[in-house]
Image 1 (cartoon, rainbow, N blue to C red):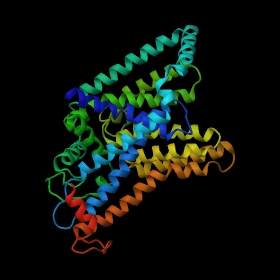
Image 2 (image 1 turned 60 degrees about the vertical axis):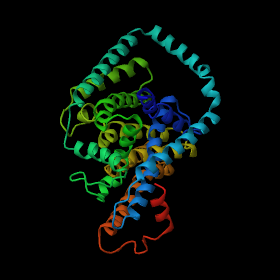
Image 3 (image 1 turned 180 degrees about the vertical axis):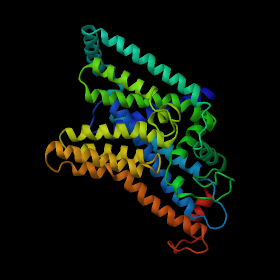
Image 4 (image 1 turned 135 degrees about the vertical axis):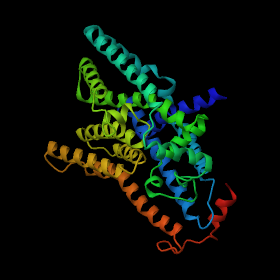
Length: 393
């Protein structure tokens, strides 16, 4: 049973992101790495939308007594949606799935030819692999014991989600319910970690401190390799770039406010995933989109990444717009005209959704905890969907 649950956990980082990515980039394919990364954030975006709807309902129907069952309902809807998307992917992408080696053979042959032409590339690749292994091993050894003040937010919130069967509904200090804090309620990342723990039967601390550090360091360097491919044409130059970047992280300013700490010290935290994985990929993906011909097919992938990145933490309302605007202004200067407004709008969908949702949650939380419904006076306890929710959880 443990093996089956562990495989289910791995599916959430392999098949599901790839399936979602292939569907989202159906009209704008840019390679398997991009498909996977877009799918990873697209998956987070889908989870975020479902989370937002169910969290809103949970708070909306809270009057006197706590309402439970929201987490179970979220998991049911999420896995139902993922099942449908995987089936759709198997249908639409069946040729690539069942004949995967047709396109891979020439690529492998080309890679072999380049390696033979420059054998020093192999040395760089092996050196980088060794450095990457050291980082993953040390992160496992360190992060399993690292408890920063944020863990009393991240880990406790995720554990409370499972034990109470609610969504961002428990006071992390005394465990009382209902207790809604806008900062936590607008981010689905803690709930996503709770889902990973629930599916795998691993403890939340095991997921955060043991499993995710290894997976996310590998994911981060996949993003950095994507950046290297964009910047350098030669494989040798890419490997040198990856080596230099690895040593920059290892010997960086190792404090709680440095990127080195976010990657190698506490990468399971939402702000860490945002800064070391989401922002670098989002910026480079936007540069890649602006450099090519404007296509409507890229709008959905940009929206998906924007939404997924915004689900990680409320800080996304600061980081994502800054990245989106800087890239847009840079490419307008590059093209010497106003260029790619549609991409700019698409890249701001996530922060806009987060900002609007934050405002609505703040107003609803005020009504829930107050003596009167100031912002939503039409909120009534005898609504039919309130009864349905209570009776069907």
